[in-house]
Image 1 (cartoon, rainbow, N blue to C red):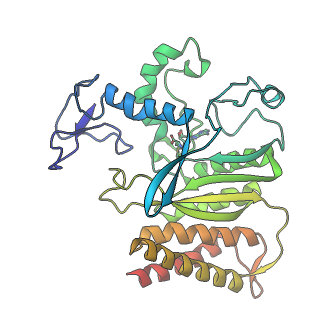
Image 2 (image 1 turned 90 degrees about the horizontal axis):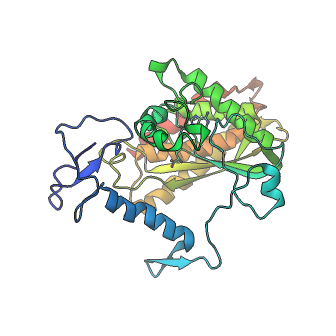
Image 3 (image 1 turned 90 degrees about the vertical axis):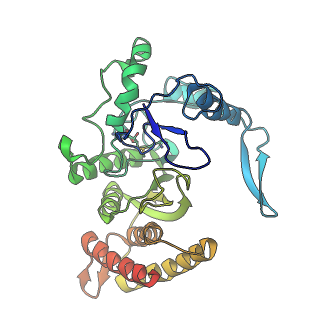
Length: 344
Ligand SMILES: C[S@@+](CC[C@H](N)C(=O)[O-])C[C@H]1O[C@@H](n2cnc3c(N)ncnc32)[C@H](O)[C@@H]1O
């Protein structure tokens, strides 16, 4: 279950695992790796055990931050910090004892948590049609299930849950509408469990503006506004998922709060704010990297547009005309188009 990495002169025989592209890609040449590994090999049990599992565990026992000092990256231990879970069986035990983790393996539309009980929801939702998670998971699940099904009821089904998955997958009868409905139900559940001053924080990126429109709609329908957005570097620059594609190196981190009330706002002032902030952000990006691609500009500017629009939602006017979500997104697309042309 692997393929050649390609013709890198330094490592001509290197192999990579089958899911390096987040998809089933049929290799040109069939190839068999030595599962346990001999010497220096990539993708084998021994190298992954050391480079992923062991390193991860070591980090948990002695976590550190990366700090830049004199242009060099330094690892600085976080004193007294240790990432370890003491599992509670329900919410009462979690808040009333020294237990610190309550773990669920279930549909995020229904969480066994009381209303207004949590300070923050931090999540990483599916990005419309980017990755077919449940289909890819089945590859491993069927093997893991054999060992785990008698101990964990979550592993009883023969395959991973498909019905409840929030994704756009035309072949399975899941379209943009069902993705919107699912995302709205999950955001509503987040709204229910969050305290009134709580934060919903999630990462998002997508090339197409349909995905952004849906996420905005779902947030607004669930009663949130976007209080801040931050572009951050996403997957490793050298990831094959990113390389050689018009892919996005930036994720938007979107921070939301519960909407209390919306005062009436004027579209022209929102547009001015969007343009000012977008220009400022793009200049900053170019001064940091020497360039900004269209895709990067899109993630950064789109995040800001959604932030300003959702803060003013639902009563946004242009003169007498009330600006609907669709109309606002059409106008945002025009602003993006202009900015993209300036970058070219
Ligand atoms: C962007 S991925 C998260 C990846 C994760 N951060 C990681 O690093 O492995 C989105 C996840 O949402 C899951 N998902 C889709 N529908 C869901 C639902 N209704 N309830 C809970 N999770 C769901 C997908 O299976 C996928 O694992």
